[in-house]
Image (cartoon, rainbow, N blue to C red):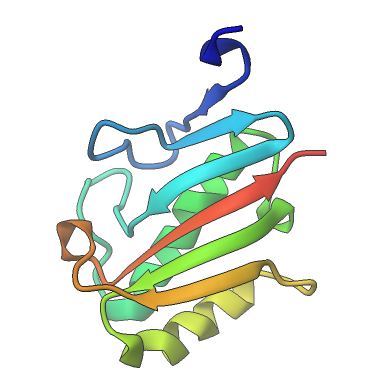
Length: 131
């Protein structure tokens, strides 16, 4: 069986396109794996302005668009990984994050990294489950 029979590309015209040789996401079986989303604004292709709060909001908007293309919402997310350029932004990122995810919250890892593509302040990748 070829890989094309067990995996489907996740893509949405409402989310920014991938900035490299990767898919926005892959749906295989009941799992959806989304590539890390940075705070690119779909219409302009530029980073959201306004600091970590605005950038986290934009990342979540992009995640929602990709999940919606699969008929899902944030409630389907079981795991997130948050990459921060500066761990001092944790509280502000967490304030935005907690407005969008409900209890039971997805499992989460948060990591400070040296650099994020396009010098974004935040990147979030998710794993979701389709019923």
